[in-house]
Length: 100
Image (cartoon, rainbow, N blue to C red; front, side):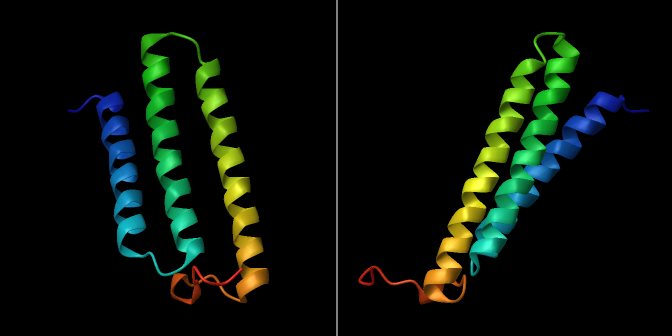
């Protein structure tokens, strides 16, 4: 019988690799890319909080990481709103470097 911490660590690593796979393979829309990045952040947060709980050190570092992940999500959503308002969609194929 496997230890629960090993199962949780394997689950969080699986979440990180699934997020990475979806970020690489489904990159046609900006919203899909942002969702896969948030899924990877959730896996990293879960792995970080498990590691901090097992070591018994400061748990405030994981709260700081969660705050930074939330700020990253808000910045990504504001970028998505800006792109949709300026280009009328979030597809990467419609972006051009020559447009202002």
